[in-house]
Length: 408
Image 1: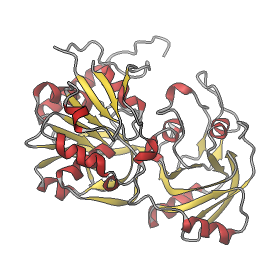
Image 2 (image 1 turned 90 degrees about the vertical axis):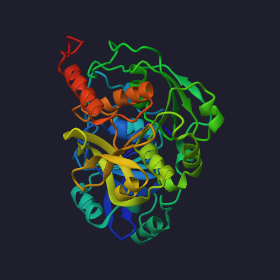
Image 3 (image 1 turned 60 degrees about the vertical axis):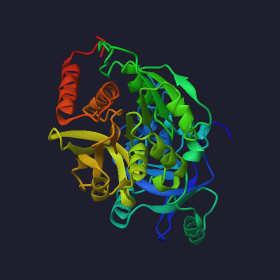
Image 4 (image 1 turned 30 degrees about the horizontal axis):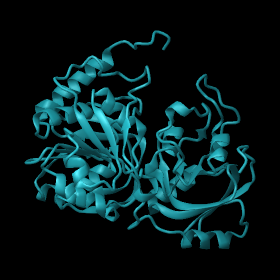
């Protein structure tokens, strides 16, 4: 397909019979997926390239998208994994000194469909009230009844292993650290030794790896199909379990691996990694009505009583009561709906959070969790309330420092 984006009439249909008419941008064709809404005001290129969105079409609640274009440095993976992109208005021109191309041309290059000029407020309200649902984007079909039927015939993400579609097949070493003047580095932090981390990649965002490098760690990215021998005989000080798409109960091979290595070395999980650790411990997962997608979700750390504004992207969650029954302590809750956002295990060195501490949704107040992972690798125990508080204080001091780049 040519990289030039050509606008065409486009239909958006949901499985409940709702149909919107708009204009396509990016690629033409037909694409199906689970429609979810995202409340972030910026960060569309990070969203589109987050492998966690595999199988989903993203509806942005902020009305204008594409105004700052696209650049390669801010991509979270090599490609676009979202199955479509829905906006109220696409910026007619982009303006940013770092931009290399427009959002529309980028999606056209990656063969991803977008639709604009629809009432995203009405669409978001429907998804908010009735829940995420299957749908279709198409420039090829004009019969609305046929479009609705295509939506109803599209596959559900529940019970489907989407990790297989986005995860690497082979191991590799990661070397790149934080590359933005807007992020406060830990490079001055001295460690008694270099910590080696096995990062199980279920659809990992690059910025997670950059934070691990910034901790001073050596990072080996592992396939989720790796074996216990790969982990236990690799000389690692800790294991990281990444974010990724879809239903955690369908990723049996990672759950089985975690059951074996838990208790043998410190483990830190984010998003899907949080869910996989919970299930491996014996807790229960469930599908959220419309998920958590955005960069403005308030989460409270119950151990320190501090509130973090977080970036989130997940459609499943771990039941808080069930995680307590398997020996864990709830550390974080979502202040919007009181769902579980984090836990530590009482007897094994395990730390897990449902949100994305590597992201920067304005504040960077969740990045202390990477320091907690380092503490866990050094002590062999889950971080305590006082250690979390000290890590938060250290982060606060870093954030108070003036930017290293005087041009900002």
